[in-house]
Length: 180
Image 1: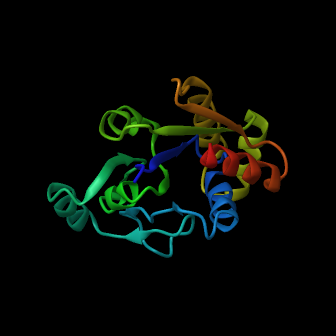
Image 2: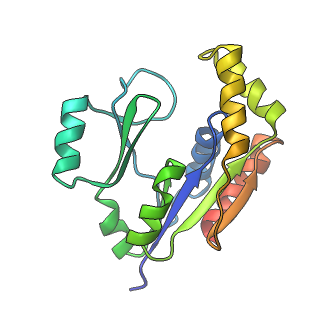
C-alpha cells in the first residue's frame, strides 16, 4: 500500500483556517482524508475549532508518553496532534492538520512527503476578521498583522492558498491543495 501524506495547514490567526478546514472536511467526506482533532489545553467551550480539551498536567503526561505525533506551545496554550495519525498514514490516507509554523521542520524530518498549505490573506482582511472575533485590542491586532507579514513559509513542499475572497473559493483552493 502506498503511504499517505501529511498535509500541514498553516497561517496567521484570523486568516480563516478553521473555516476553510470545516469546508474541506465536508467537501472531502467519503475520500481517504482524515482531519484529526487536536488536543489543546483550552476549555472545550472556548470557541474556535472542535478540539479535545485537556488540562496542562494531562497534556504534559501524554507528551512525555509519546502520545503526540507533533506538539507545541503558542499563545499560552499547548497543542498536540494525536500519534494515531501514523496508522492513518500507513493505511494510505491523507492526514490534514492545522499546526504552528514552528513545527514544520520537525514534521518534514519525521514524515516523508509532507505538504505544507500556507493560507494567507491581505492585512485588511486579517484586521477585519480579527476585529470581528472581539478577542483582541486594536494594538494586539496590529501586532498579529505585523507578525503575519514578518513570517514566511518556504520550501518545495509549500502550496499557497490565498483566502481574500468568498469562502467557497478558499475552500475549493484548499481542497485542491489537499488532493495534490
